[in-house]
Length: 327
Image (cartoon, rainbow, N blue to C red):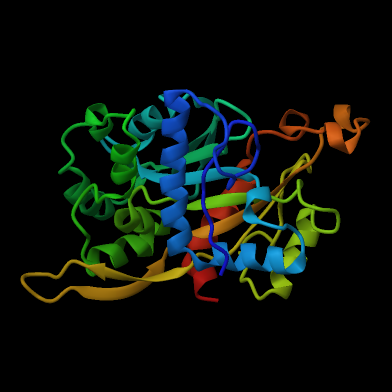
């Protein structure tokens, strides 16, 4: 299995390349935070290695350093002291800027994407469950856990301490839920159930396919490659999700299942249950019409379709839903 090291560098668009240039303290901290996030994520999601190993074996890339990370994504709860208002402070500190707002009516979610301080860093997509729109029972369950967070934890976090930020993004923010509470939420909002157990755990990272070698640099070609290597893909809304303008084309694996340990009740032993973890996404950002005349070697990120699309993201969310994991 290929060793994957997730470190960013300021002279490259790569996700995995080692740092070779002098950077500012803020950039070094951001590099370390992203490295911590991606390293733990890759350990937890075997499909990361499966995809990269297959790409190397097929000759699409020579090493993981050639992969560009289009974006990473997080899920949050819209409750006091947490959610978008809290989480956004972390990456704003490193120079990320909040962009478009998205409303997912059926899933009761609000989301924003954040543009990076430099083009070699990934975009960030953060969503929040509108808890107040759930049933009274679901709200009571969620607040039973999240109300123990009585102040915004980011306000007391040293954002210049990469190790502290890394620990925060991987530590429990409330008590481990019971299996009964998890299953009650699952029946009403699979997003709520995912967050109540996984907290801020990285939901997915995204391989930019448009910068790969010809024959694999469209989403259609890359999906065919993934399917030929036995990857299970999210079929919600079609395997390939396409924005109305045709400029953003996305696909994703089905979330990896993990053995989760839930809190016991009244002194009883802990329950273990298989739940959805994280997944891998793939994106093709097509060249904007006004730049179609440029030679391929002059195309950079600014020449391609930017941002996100509600319809695409709505179906990508379902990579963790039982309709996909139970196939």
